[in-house]
Structure formats: structure tokens, C-alpha cells
Amino acid sequence: MAEITLLDGSIGQELVKRSGDKPTPLWSTRVMIDHPELVQEVHAEYFRRGATVATTNTYAVHRSRLERLGMEGQLPELIHAAVTQANQARKDSSGRIAGALGPLLASYRPDLNPDVEDAAEKFAELVNLMSDDVDLFLIETVSSVQEAEGALRGTAEAGKPVWLALSVMDDDGTRLRSGEPLAGIAPLVDRFNPDAVLINCSRPEAVPAALKVIATMGRPFGAYANGFTGIAQDFLKDAPTVDVLTQRHDLGPEAYADHAMEWVAQGATIVGGCCEVGPDHIEVLADRLRSAGHRIV
Figure 1 (cartoon, helix red, strand yellow):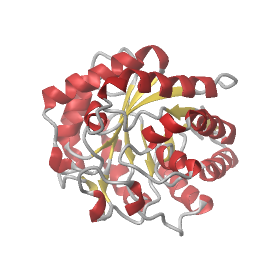
Figure 2 (spheres, rainbow, N blue to C red):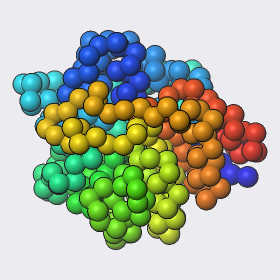
Figure 3 (spheres, rainbow, N blue to C red):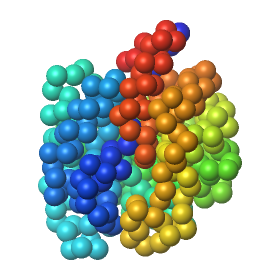
Figure 4 (cartoon, rainbow, N blue to C red):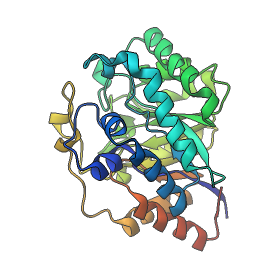
């Protein structure tokens, strides 16, 4: 039996759902501005359900996104609000806080490929704003080799563990969303030495093939998949809103846990959920892990 780190599930989508507000291009950042109390509430619930890591609501907090609305000056304030809410939620827990670092420009858009040096500078700024208040950094939904390099450069001096999470094609887990072979990440893993390599925000069916690839990279590995039917073309436009994405109805808590337990059987030691995978899913997964004799850490 193994020691398994259980991540939380969806943060952004969960916040949008609980707010009841119409989605905006600012996504969960808008919810945090309008309903700050919901952020702590969501983190606390995941801890109660069995998660041992809270992922900060900073995935979409980037200057490039805030600039569209003339809000770039609020970046430090928004980062502080997000990490504070996560820390308040764990006050009665031994859980860890992961500082989320999402794509600089847009999710699932490897065609945008931000300049590596510029990206490194922007990620380093975020690291500096969060470093005193998080236990590790989680680079999320990386869709190309170039995206990975910019993010890894920007976190190279973080002084905290760095986990790299990659997003693969829904119909081919051996390829990044850019179409590049997932194995092409290996030289960057060797060069920058992240503390874990993960697969995230991909269909759970694509994960087993991806895990076979990252398992060869000599790092702890794992996955947290999404519950979308797929990535709609309307979402691959500038400033999209999440209402163009459709939730699967065949991926309830038990079905999702079936997938995640398969990943654990493959050697994954870090599992959790991404978009549309909520607290009920995490609770069932925690129960399944314990029933199988694993220790959640």
C-alpha cells in the first residue's frame, strides 16, 4: 500500500456554480471579488471531505487577463486575497497550500505560446507574491513544451517545491494539447527538476496513457482530470466564458474514483480532481483510497 497525496477538486468551476452569477472572462477571479467568503468555504469543504492540499484561487489571476478590464494594478491585492482565504480554511487542518499558476494567456491555447523570457518574468512575479504563504507551487494545464519552459524558468528560484501539471489531448494521452509528444517534456524535467510531474484538466480516459509516459521521468507522478465532455471550439477564442463548456453526466463520484484508483494502481501517488470534479468526488475517492489500505498524506 502507498502514501497518497489527495488534492482538492475544482476550485474555479465550483466557485462559479456557488455564486449563481453569470460567468465572465475573469472566471473565478470575478467571483472572488464579488463573493470573497465563498473561496474559504470551498477550500474548507474540500479539507473536510478528505483533501490534504488546497489549491489557491490564483489560476486565472494574471496581469494579461486583468489588463483587459484595466485591473492590472489589483494583481497583488487579488493574490493576497486568494492565499489568505486558503490559509484561513486550513487553520484547523494539517493540509498544505499549493499556489496555483495557470496559463498566462488562456487555457488549452498552445497556439498562443508566450515568449519564454517574458513568461518566466511574469511567473517569477507571482511566485514572489505568494511564496511566504504557500507550501508549494502547482503549475497547471501546461499545453506545450514552450509553455512548460517559461513556467519552470519562472519558478526555478521559488524556494518551495514545484509541481508541473500537463494537459494532454482528450483522444491521445501521449500528446500535449499542442500535438507535441508528451515525452518531449522530459529534457525540461531533467533541467529544472520539478518535485512532481502530473496530468491535469484532461479527460480521465486519456490519463492512463499519459501516466505511462511521465512515470519514466524519475519523479513522483499523478493526475487530476476534468469532467468536461470536451473542449468546445467556442472556448478557444479570446476572452471566453466557461458556459460554453459542458459537464459530463456519466462521471459521478464513483465513476471518477474508478478512474483515479486505476491511476494509483499504475503508481500515481498524487491524485485529485480538476474542473467539474467536486467535493462529493473527493470524498468518495478518499473513502476508496482508505478502503484499499492506502494512507492519505
